[in-house]
Amino acid sequence: MSAPEPCLVLDGSARAGVRVGVLSGGRWVGQGISPDGALEGLFGCVEAALAEAKLSLADIRSFALCVGPGSVLGIRIAALAVRSWTALEPRPIFVWESLAGIARSALAAGEKGPFLVAAESRLKRWHALEVSAGGSLGVPFEAEAAQLNSSGRRVLASSEAAAGVLTSHVAVPHPWSALPTFFTQPGFLREEPRPDALNVANDFATWSGERHRS
Image (cartoon, rainbow, N blue to C red; front, side, top):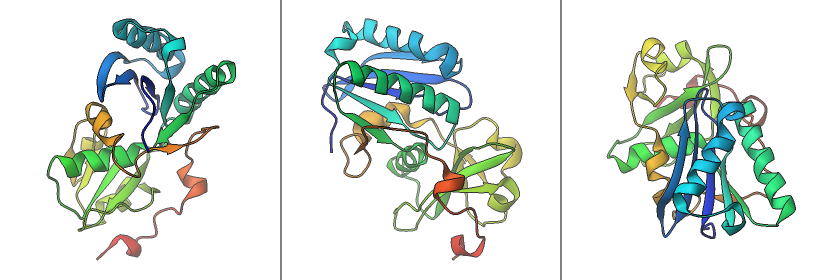
């Protein structure tokens, strides 16, 4: 499934920082990136991305939104903006998940499974996902840092906080630059007319220990 272009892409899932881009012709034609949270930075990034692309919001044919797991506030601010724009002019909304982006980026860079990918959660916990030896992605789960450290897996993360708490941490770049490629791959995007933040703690099982060991 591919999003009609030009597509306005929004990622407010990080604990700090927001990214917005305009995707057209399979590449970024405009971007807005801010170190601020979505509340302070999202709409300025939208304006910057549209200005660089020399487009207006009326020119956008679809929206793509990261639904996390990540900052629930940031994701919901971005989701509310997109839902408001589509209420004024109906256009399709597509979503992707942050951990899947990190995992695909790592695989594309030559990393071999099994490994875990992780992103900061709340209360010093971590969202994580396992990539198998064959490269298939598991479902997201939530765990303590100590549980990830005892998993026997490398833990790939783009968060600066990971190095201080994850003993098997491998630093990887944010997958933003690779998203235009991932958007063309089957299964990465799905259409969602009323997007909301993915809640791993409620929607998926938490860490059970043995199920992630081989």
